[in-house]
Length: 521
Image (cartoon, rainbow, N blue to C red; front, top):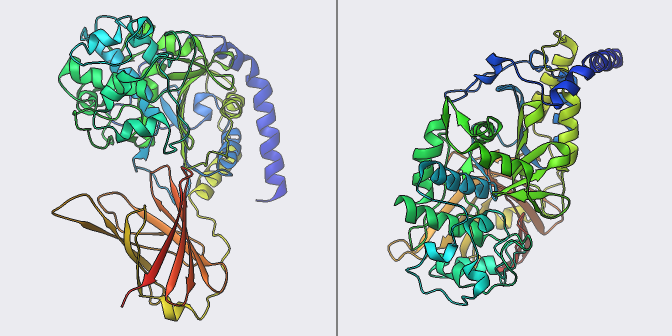
């Protein structure tokens, strides 16, 4: 873009900021929205608007899309006054694919608990937990455990002894998943403090809440959600894994939603639990989530399985690897972000709030701004355009290893794999062991790009594979694989030595493994 165009866009944006600053401040102070804005319900589809029609600056949103794109993000969506003003999808991810929400799932489980209260299935959040599971023989019962309530589960202040460190093998969460009775495992945990005394992030708390849905409704959390939450909101993209041996849906993670449906869930909270004239959850529930009664970590507050930054006028559902549903009530905004950030990569929620807030210039429509609109369109297009990574040469070794099958015995349960480098489509095949007697192995296959870009495979039952690879020296081939919509990137480094291969595996969750294989006859 020519420098004079950029300069004019900057000047226009500056003038609009000065003109709209007072109106934006009035909106931030809680000025009432026009009645027609209160009646937008995106049950069937999301209305779309230009940012200027909703009092926002297209140039500011273009800058935000560019900033978000410097991280490993999949999508960004901004809704104001019930209308989409900007949405970007970062290649190779594309619109419409359900995304792994990780711990955003917890906020949904909390919401299902609120629906039980609204419907009268649950009498009170002050109900003692062990009374609700009175048929179970619960271990380590003392006065503190007797005092543990549904509310203390919702606030992560249950007081249970619990260690959660990003899915390491010895942590409490992973021991829960290995237990034949996960609900019983959580209930049996000894107490470390009195309920309500302090915040301790604990995946067992929402697991108990999910189990409670089974007891109070006769349905697992997913089936209950489909009828009581997803259907009324028009959410159709939901996927939520499998139930455990007791028929309980995983409560702490596992839910998939598309960004549009994530925004619908956030919009329910922005509208104080109301949807098309029906109170889905109590407004008092939303207020408690917004206020964040419990001091959490890193400056955040917490309540009802929602995080909040009251000083910023914001509250949010957050999940690992940058899954986010952000609510800014005074600005009448819902923002959605999905991604695959590693644990050592941070995209500041506080910075995101500031960037969105700066793009708000008025609570009323602004004049059309063709230059700023062009900047926004360009930013969205660039986000959807994949930037190729560097590619090296191709060694002679390719002719020896292409199409050959390598056998393994390892903790990843990989039986064998094959890489095909020759021909028009480079591809990989992996066979893994299963626990099923009728199908002891399972075969996965896909394409990979050798030009620095991901190649997408045809859709499979588990999703869409996207992979790319390159030779980093004469003997080592590195492949990056994704299943689009999952908050994970897999990195495979394969070093060949005659008829043997050493594979180093690492994923976004921080799991690492080294495999040793040998070429089969």
